[in-house]
Length: 111
Length: 113
Picture (spheres, each protein chain N blue to C red):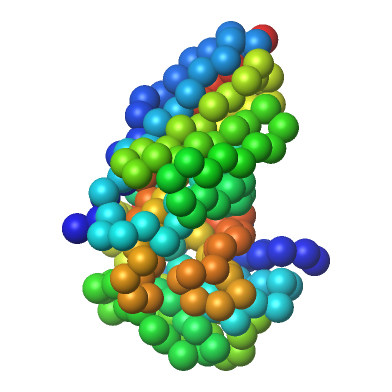
């Protein structure tokens, strides 16, 4: 069974304090790994898709990386507006299969 | 309007009521999805429509009834719900099927009393 585990469940950072969020996954062949950002009371906002180990993608202060077992979302010098829940999801290569989501990491950045 | 819109944004209903959630996508996509998001749980896929055809029904109770009249509109009809159905209901769309990136609407926050 495909699974996604995100850690930590919650993370509190001071403004400017860089850190990483982890997404560990087990899947029967990975087609893609997705990162979303979700603000309270809103729907998830697409950030990145990673397809193969070693791939990296960046957007502003966010950088996502992928290995064969996990993905990291690195946040460099975060600002309060980066506070949100970050969701990770995987899609298996086999057949037409839906996304499997993790529970998310709730990030709070304090000024 | 741009992206994926959902109405209403908030809904309070009794267990004997009948209500409907509406989703509209302005992205020219062909697939639409309903998800349920409860506290402390991952997003749960409920239904998938691809080119107006239902391709997934993830063991959802019959008190939830989807309708997809065209590729741009998706409804979720609700009747005789239970308090445990209270959650954020999210609509998403993608260009094609699962292999394409999904874009989400803002959700409807549902409270069942």
